[in-house]
Length: 298
Image (cartoon, rainbow, N blue to C red; front, top):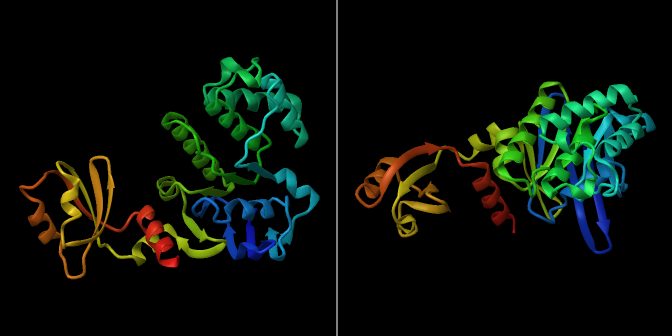
């Protein structure tokens, strides 16, 4: 089931929340909708889900506007989570599955499988209010996929998850991609988008900043970044004329080479000043491209 968003716009009073956004998400692929908080990602998703209507533009499913029967073919994980806290977990999952037409016996097998996958089996007969925040988030994801949708729309699915839960959810989404699902992933976490998405659309203030395949976008910005893993003073590169832009992480740095500077010159400058563990010339990370493009557009 292909999703097409064609030049949609949405205004709230004097604020243009979304301004001419277009994208195409296809079966068997993960399409990333990226942007900072307040960029218009959630408003775009709410229009796709027919929660609110666009002021202009079209949203098509397999080339047609959404029809009543299409709703059961879509799974949605909203940014604002909400579960019935007084219900027993298994009953809650059965209830949500029934809303999408799920058969009780068949759905129970799927519930048991997903609970086992996310290490939640022992919580099956416990009330939702007893679950941790991370557990509840995994349950919300299970709700969105129990009815085996053709399209899966995920709004900030990794927000607030610990690393183990994040990896479990990432693998689950990639498995659904292999099954041929169409997946729209909204996030501001660039590392996850770079690892998972084939194509992306970066938006800011409701407008397109950059779009295309991750590979093509990274290639477009050239192989002029250097990854440096080290022991020592990271401020050394802040004072170096061989680099123009430096992003520091714990124990490693991504630096952009200055015009005319070479990797060999930078390596020679660093030798003896810090203890190098890795020095690699790479295309810029999606995180760096994201930051650079937003700064240029503001």
